[in-house]
Image 1: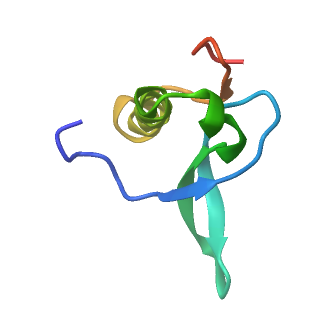
Image 2: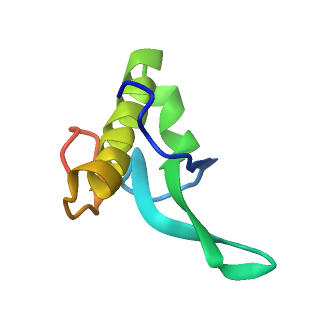
Image 3: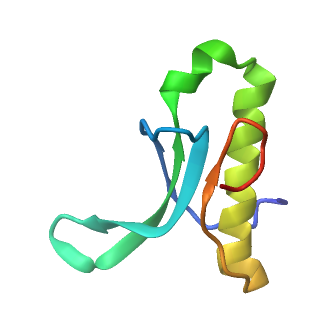
Length: 87
């Protein structure tokens, strides 16, 4: 992505049926609800069944959603299923 992605929060979240997800403006600051950041979540429950390459592939997939949301002007949403397709 050429160091062009905005900052975001990377979390580990259990989300049934998903290896990961992107949530635009998903987190607000505790003391300022208007200060928000995006989230990329990875599901740690899936790590045992995945290779390192698979886990990093999910991360890059969600980074592509981050890129779409901020730099490509495209709508984003959904989760990544085991077959790599949006759910």
